[in-house]
Image 1 (cartoon, helix red, strand yellow):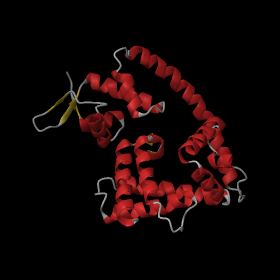
Image 2 (cartoon, one colour):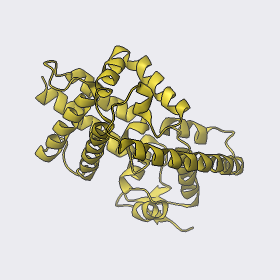
Image 3 (cartoon, helix red, strand yellow):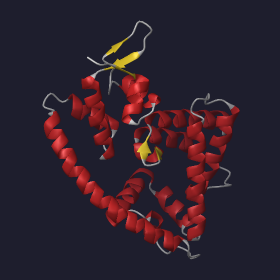
Length: 256
């Protein structure tokens, strides 16, 4: 039986070695065996399980949900593959529609106009999904969501776009620093910028209340919900853990 090292499997599947390490730690994808030097080795069944994990992730399932599905005694690979094919084709159609919506959104953002209602803050999503995100946020954070929306609606579309671009750039810089200690000056400098950017979205930038507890809580949300740490359309659980720990350290050591 051919066996694959963690690096070989990562290259084959198009995921990072860190991701496979996280999956192993979670019990989501255990290696077939380990060498005397403790190196992970994967066989055919592990490759098939990783394929299932990636298919379910593509369909926006959370890692905990995927683990429950794959570990169910009634799980059938063939039935699952047939369902994936149907669901992925449906997603392909939705993505084609979303691309058209994004093109329209880009044109709107070029116009220096102030947004008139909260729905515009979620442009680029279907009305149903936008409302779903907004409702979920209101249920979790109540008045804070309305306060944030009120602040953001005072900005022009280009200003909103600039905030989002800044957020993405900070996320990418932090992603590149994952090999560093969360306590390092490089990481904490970027976290400080992340904190300031988040406060702008919250509408509390410059306020006396540092919101240390809320900021640390946001870090935990990143771990609990993969949507918040998407990079280039892919979720990165290891990045979520890194970011959460770095944010908690920042909140406890620089905000209190």
